[in-house]
Amino acid sequence: MTKALQGRRVSVIGAGIGGLTAAIALARRGAQVTVLEQAPQLSEVGAGIQISANAVRVLDALGLAPALADHALRNTGVRLHDDAGRVVLRMDLLRHRPDARFLVIHRPRLIEILHRAALDAGVTLRLGQRIETPPEGLVIAADGLRSPLRQHLNGQQVPFFTGQSAWRATIPDAGADQAVAQVFMGPGRHLVSYPLAHGIRNIVAVLERHEWQDEGWSHADDPANLRAAFAGFGGPVPGWLSQVRDVSIWGLFRHPVAPRWHDEGMALLGDAAHPTLPFLAQGAGMAIEDAWTVAACLDADPDTRAALARYQAIRQPRVTRIVQAANDNARNYHLQGVKRRAAHGVLRLADRFAPRLMPGRFDWLYDYDPMTDCP
Ligand SMILES: Cc1cc2nc3c(=O)[nH]c(=O)nc-3n(C[C@H](O)[C@H](O)[C@H](O)COP(=O)(O)OP(=O)(O)OC[C@H]3O[C@@H](n4cnc5c(N)ncnc54)[C@H](O)[C@@H]3O)c2cc1C
Image 1 (cartoon, rainbow, N blue to C red):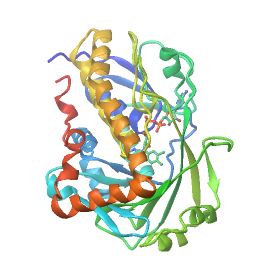
Image 2 (image 1 turned 90 degrees about the vertical axis):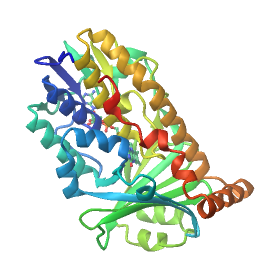
Image 3 (image 1 turned 30 degrees about the vertical axis):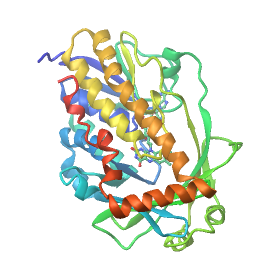
Image 4 (image 1 turned 180 degrees about the vertical axis):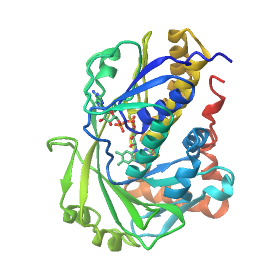
């Protein structure tokens, strides 16, 4: 095996989940990595995140399992409900994939874990560095949805509003040692909730709207607006929403998957290359997979352009499929009228008579092992 990254200087732009994971993966292979982040300090939105088995495999391979064990909960299943709170479909992740670990974690904790591991691997982090044009040398651009470096490779592109907005909130929780992600589906809206470690419950509530006129991409909102939008929902939802004290609302924007991910010395990674709707909980997961693969391809081939071309060839078809599946979920979660009754009826039948059918539909997503790429 070639060790083409040994001693090589690499700049990673952006210290989000993708950039920090890439920094660790590159440094573990002997690269001298500097992360350049525009923010004056590392921060993440105070919400939860689901990390599915395909991405947990990478975090484990990077030696993060012990830290994750302290701060993440194992996600054992997904339960779909209608807006009245009645169960539509249960997907038992443990029974279908007993050896795979699906996790939920508070985002700031995940960033802390990645930051600590990056420092331990010898990565240098420089804050307050906004990068508009690629620096000299090998560059990994993990600078998110509004990436200037994506534009450098693909020309001027403005992210489009997807017609969806999302409230994010956390509330106190009794404390759990495992999580089930519950999804409540109503016409034109849905709400996802799961417990996190350390007595917190995460809530994401998505509402279709025609346009996003508010200034900026997110802002604090009045919890009364969230409660009003989900007023008709039953089950545990009213009790959860009554506890929300602080909430922020996000306009969900994206680009198509970038046509061009690299040139001879720079590659895009994560949301910079392929922002997605969050309805399959895969945006960070894809960034984590990218991070492993770009490091593995660069290490395996001293010809940087060829290595980066191989990285794009491996990653682009997979992320395109994932982004499409997330778009499909957006449609299926928000159905109305006859279509909704028919779809829920089919899912209830599958729940009763073919419980392995629906979890099996996502084998291609969750059973994927990025470690088999660019070995
Ligand atoms: C409501 C919601 C729920 C979600 N839930 C999940 C989930 O459960 N599971 C999941 O896998 N994904 C989820 N996602 C998606 C996930 O959050 C993103 O896909 C992921 O965080 C992208 O990581 P990234 O590192 O590519 O980009 P970012 O997290 O956007 O990081 C980019 C970094 O680059 C920095 N930066 C930007 N521009 C510059 C510049 N010019 N110079 C220097 N630094 C710069 C930024 O400050 C930032 O730190 C969700 C998203 C939303 C909106």
